[in-house]
Length: 244
Image (tube, rainbow, N blue to C red):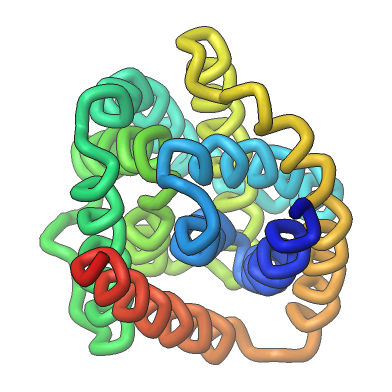
């Protein structure tokens, strides 16, 4: 029944929307981990990417004028180059082990973030291109990768508002290209538009709540809460996948 999907999926994207509106990232990683309990990974990823693009459009007016273009340009250009690589992985990697890889990646990055362990990258254009390329591939293949670029950008000394705005722009453009590439390669699937339409109201409500909280909760606390949530879901998802 449709309600058996819409109700739990709506709750998942509602929480993911709150996280996205609050921190500027985390929607895709959280939503994928939750939705793969309801859908195969290859069906969940296109739905999440479409919702992510729509979320970026809804958040864009509040982020306008705050983007750090010096950081955004190299990240975006390299991420766009990484998208085709990720799509190859989506087409040829076994779905079961793809889910395992997603859970391991998110759990590892969440633990590094909670432990405040710096990533083994340095500043500069080269590092920005490396981080952007890997992130683009991960986003298009698994709809995750946000924690990597977020962890790197937190060392750039941006204000919370600038960091959030830069992330909104980055994920919006990369996800839009990923959706276009998926559509051209036939990976969206006939059920994707209907699922996106049913889940959009919950996503929009979550974004509104997240933006409301952004003005009242410290960004550091918001990011820490997101990382704890991602860690918990990655462990649950990994246990479920490995025992199925």
